[in-house]
Image 1 (spheres, rainbow, N blue to C red):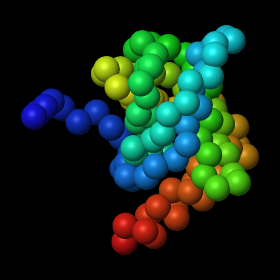
Image 2: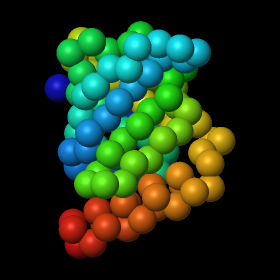
Image 3: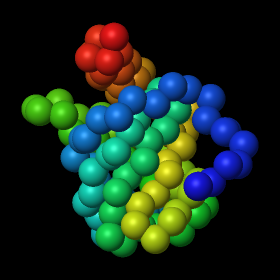
Image 4: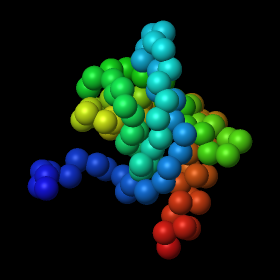
Length: 109
């Protein structure tokens, strides 16, 4: 078991969302699914993760609604990617993320 220092700054919620990860500037979209999400990042399960440091466009889908933002791969084990959301999340996208997280908080309360 890994006993390292916890570096996450936001509470993560276990939730599965459809994920599409595209390496910038014009990579091929890779699909996966989240295993958790927070206001600052998520983990995407993927058979073909991108390397640590990759600049990406992240698109998450929940029902008929999507969240899309620039992000960075900060951790890349063999079968997934730890992703940090960039601080430049467009306001409309940030509203979608906050709405989802509020719903996830209700589910675990």
